[in-house]
Image 1 (cartoon, helix red, strand yellow):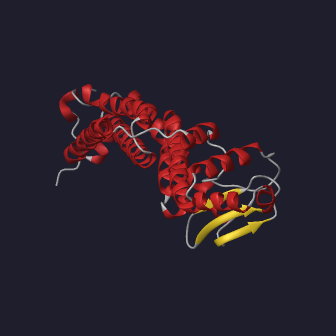
Image 2: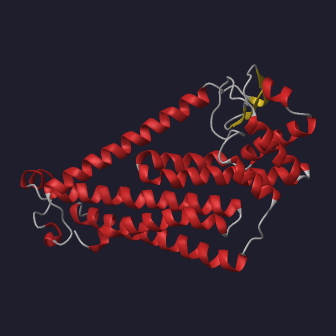
Image 3: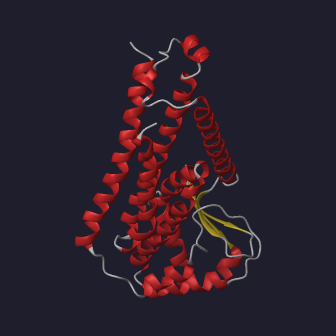
Length: 293
């Protein structure tokens, strides 16, 4: 193996660093988009590296290389991997696949329970139940316990927040980030950051729609103080996800530092995408060598 194998590691480090620092300089919308892109391309680079190492390790086994017609001197040992390293990479690839499959089944199971939601649906639940259900048709689910706890204006704030999740397709960002994190657990902190930024994004949109940042902040605080009670919930729920930070951001918004955020965003995306592209290109050359036309 050579220095190219370190590219996915460097891309992962850049992506993780971006997860903690970008929200300070970007709007919630931009932060969500950039962080999700960083997670996806980092995961793609690492998976490509694992595939390459697995095949390279197998190519060093004479019986395997003879059976598939590979050259025994593949890359002349410069880019190859020992059978042991290849086996470890194959095991890691299997674990990644298993994690992604489990996450996919969990998401499908959760959404199946509310597959018939169309528009606004009220359910009998005492806890602070309020969440968006993406899909077709999709809609917003509210618990009657929450409605009794809030006044008319606060109910409008909750509904505006959850509707923003649906119209802005936040489930796609959260789903992509959490799917990658399920296969690569070290990405979980960054995936949690994406979920938080989608909540901040929905907060900003909802505040504009109802015309009061104070009202939305008060509603978030009141819902957070409600007892948990009982009731179902899936992703994109109104409660949780660092409510203190959300309230503070609404009551004391910070101006966006566009002159700083623009080059920073371009730099982060450029580094991570370049790292992924180099690794995938390396893998393409590998396949071109072992599978000549």
